[in-house]
Amino acid sequence: MSADLSRVAGGGAQPRAEGAPAGASAETPDGGATPVHARHPLTWVPSVYLAMGLPNVLVGLVAAILYKNLGVSNEDIALYTSQMYLPWVLKPLWSPLLEPYRTKRWWVITMQFLMMASIGAVAFCLPLDGFFRASLAFFWITGFASATQDIVADGVFMTTMSPREQARYAGLQGMCWNLGAVVASGLLVSLTGWLHGSLGWTWVQCWMAVMLGAAAMMGGFGLWHLRVLPPGAPSAVQGQDLSSAMVSLRESWITLFRKPSIWMMLAVVFFYRFGEGFIEKFGPLFLLDPRTAGGLGLDNAALGHIYGSAGTIAFIAGAFLGGFIAAKMTLRRSFLLLAIALNLPHLTYYYLSHALPTDLWWIGAVVAIEKFGFGMGSVGHMLYMMQQIAPGPFKMTHYAMATGVMALTKWATGSVSGWLYAGVGQHYASFFGWVLVFSIPPIVLAWLAPFPVAVDREDLGAPAGGH
Image (cartoon, rainbow, N blue to C red; front, side):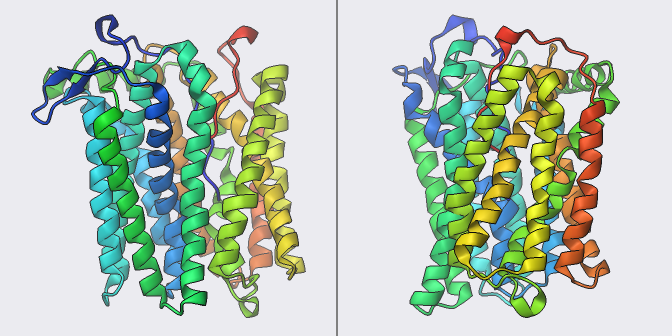
């Protein structure tokens, strides 16, 4: 599916170091700091969030399409690509370990150059006989680098700008994250279809070219951020030893599980997108599979247009509507409605798998309905984590932990989706029938969801769209 709605405008930004203005210093190659002129947020916020959305969707969605084109079975695609969600699941475990060393800026730029190398390595693996295992290894490296970039890039944003500035640039932040997703799932996938259909390139040649292009983009982001990215405020344990970070990590976990109703809240977070997790993994495979296998028989170009244009526009429109509803009604009163908005449109894939329409415009419109509901409902998911789980002395860390639970849902559903597909005899109509069953618990849990943290109406704000 399209990118998740997880880039939020978080309140309670950490103060800048000793009151320094945004972009007041930059790190030199040896780790020191030299004064530079303050950079306007427009010079770095769009590029940072583009650089976050692109690799996230490349690993989470585009890799599955790549392997489908290269002849890997649906079951293997679902099982092995789902494991690549683990970096986002596990990122709370190593995020405090980054704090004592270097600046946030250094980590962002280093991860971008590492992703340039790892994505480029994927391209050179594709002509090999053992391309599947080799490319998976480099996708794994890309995933860990991308998850690390998410941690520190959000840290730069939240510690460089005041709460007022965060609110001002939240919409731009989310739009650029989704634009990165559009580039990956729309333009790049469509490009492979054009190269294959119009120029007659083999799928290996098409995907080598696209992966090298994606690698070049990450290298370009790294070079640009060497010039413009501010360092972010230093952590309280920066310059200290690893033991200080371990103490902070332990304390953050202890305080999380002391929160009232925490287990029920984590259950709500885990199951909220349970049905969506199965569609995210098998939706594009169903659209690409030939009609003889029960799919819709689309090519890469058509899939890229549906995901990258109609789907993304519908997702963003749904997200803005969901934010408006949550702000007007409050999250507590709108949460069940938003959960229904996310899960009810799963009927669209059930319909497509039975009707098997041939009109591309109609298929795109039906997929857009599901994307609209996904965008609208995701607002409730992200606001619930931000307003009910994150508040406290470790707000950023607890939010990262909550989003890790969200990623755990993707990992779990993606891992078992291949077995479910095989268990129903590789019959898509039966598979999506089970998805409808799996969409019931999220609605029930949203109805029972606890709200232990009181949120004032004036503190409400619509989150930006993102991963």
